[in-house]
Length: 425
Picture 1 (cartoon, rainbow, N blue to C red):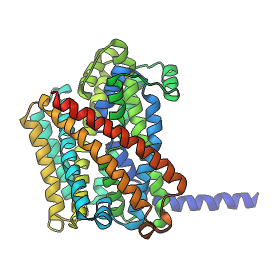
Picture 2: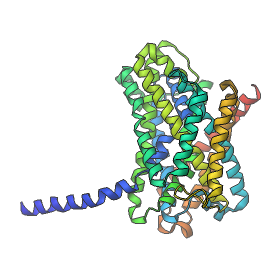
Picture 3: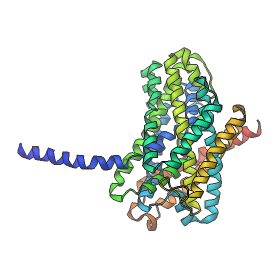
Picture 4: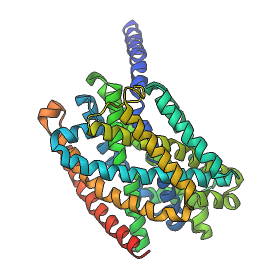
């Protein structure tokens, strides 16, 4: 009995010592995963639920594993090398490849940042607030947070924002779905040879695994300077973030499928979905959905420009990092500021209907950039001179390359569809 008691006390002491380390490491993966559910993502999941019910839930489960494996490679490279992804691409593949990747990334993330401010405008309208008040307020707040805050303070604020995503889970329960149908759709794959279904199917993959995520998480891990001995906790952080991404998106689909789909209500944006929920699921479900959209848009409006500033600064060898002052990292903060000003300013100046072409361009750019990033990542993570014993295992390489090939094919298909749609507009 004494031995058992000593064993329990010993394990408790180890746990007490380890717990602060775990909490110190957690952050990059969880934040990256939650920001992935931005205004564009929420719109995609809302439209899926409204137009096709529960039929794509099974795909969200599968894509969780793909996302986890891809983001884990970024986290591992960040811990082992202490460098961001853009930095490694420049060192291993040269200036030309880096320049192509950065140009695509900047234009894509600018379009996405505009989408986030459009999400702020849409959510604000539900609360009767003018975008001319909310957008400047949000832009100023996220700028001040990053420019004036430390890495730790920014990370803590973003982690608090992550909690607000639970509003979507509550909204789904308030919609009173048929859980037996939900469970069946989660485990039984279904597919429709319908152009709209196929387009949304591909768009879901594109919005769940976006190029900015790989750059942001690896840069965050590198700036946090996580030791190799604590890597397993960063891997845990990454897998938790990947799970939370699709946990939230799962309930967004359920909320819209159980109300809008059954009533035959078609929506084109997340803001329309939030407004349409009121007569079907109740005012509070609608408000919670809108709060979630506003929270997601604010969070992503800060993180997407930050991700871009990290990547471009690393690519060109400029000083970067939230822990540095404006004087120490002028290019980093200037680019961050420019993206926020442009993103917010353009949404204020032009009507929402004009943003459609820009969003289509963003999707097309993502479709071109994502396959390229995946191939470069796989080459980097398997470079033994760079990663030592932390290269991918053979099994993981087979799994990730297989997924990459499928995603490349889907991305190319989405790009062709998007370009054709833009031509016919």
